[in-house]
Image (cartoon, rainbow, N blue to C red):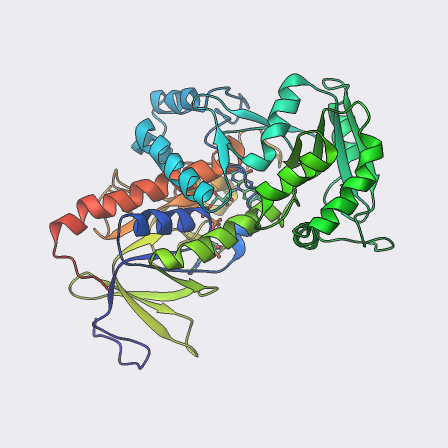
Length: 442
Ligand SMILES: Cc1cc2nc3c(=O)[nH]c(=O)nc-3n(C[C@H](O)[C@H](O)[C@H](O)COP(=O)(O)OP(=O)(O)OC[C@H]3O[C@@H](n4cnc5c(N)ncnc54)[C@H](O)[C@@H]3O)c2cc1C
């Protein structure tokens, strides 16, 4: 391919890596790339991370048809491998997965969003539906909820008039039998009296002010009585959550915790804010809200990516690409009457033979649906392969939920899969590609 002739293109400016996608996989890939001193550019719209609950699942359910819940996520992964599963975890060692989690947790902690996990144990977390979700890594702000649930300690859940996504009453009534000491109270959030609806992000922003916290605590205080913990919807600030939790604990005299909510999620917003603000000073060129519209390959193997479409073309040249564009929701995969396809590189996909077999007959079939395991197949270096197992491009690496042979939603492995495969993909780029050729940096 000839180099594009455009004022928006500098042919001498070559990045090591272009990360496409800004969900957890894309963000993690950018972090791992800049930590390894690769010159990195990332494009992607905000969508993905805003939906994330803030919990980082590793692996909780396998096999999905039996809905077997594992107390130890590593045992679940070992079982998966033993059964010859093609799940992406079968291509990554436990040590590498653990290192990936540690690197992300350490980054987030230094940016003010600490995470807690126990090495060999899934943690029980109360959801806004009153169910218990088993996950691996929880934001520090949710940690006391794990303790309160384990102890079945007397606990008060607070919710707010007009906050539609969250009902303390539903949580307490769903869990009443196993947790009789759980109680709910609904109050008005300061300065929202009379409003029919309040938005989680607005509450979180308001709580950044200490006067609002004092006013809120004064309303809650008479309701505490015997409670030894206080649970809140996950709206305890955007940038100062640790300080806000500590202040509320001081005012109320008991430990407080957050309960993850339905999207749009404030912890997801926090993650997005951290990645978007902390990675660029570390060297990432972050093209916020930009989509890669098309891709071409030069004779030397470098990719040229067209960002922004016909009216606002901008071209980026990179020696390697991490494709982390997710599945159908973010348009990483598309479908029509003939099948499922990947729109950027036109990669061959693992998918059901025909449209009729995308779904089982019953919507709630316990084994999920074949379409949920469709995606890109890879080699051990996370490079896309064709139907014969042949690597398609030596410098195209795949990460996250676009990968085949996993049903992250049912297996409860979403963020773990995204983080671990981003780690494997970036390291594979360095080991398989960068070390074998002269490095040109931007
Ligand atoms: C409602 C919800 C709740 C969740 N809860 C949990 C949970 O409790 N625990 C957990 O571990 N995980 C959870 N997850 C999963 C997790 O947040 C991630 O969605 C999942 O891990 C997949 O991440 P990903 O980065 O591969 O894909 P995505 O999150 O889908 O991100 C892909 C991104 O790529 C972008 N993109 C696509 N095409 C292009 C292009 N051409 N150019 C640029 N950008 C492009 C998309 O717009 C999107 O932003 C949840 C997800 C959702 C949706």
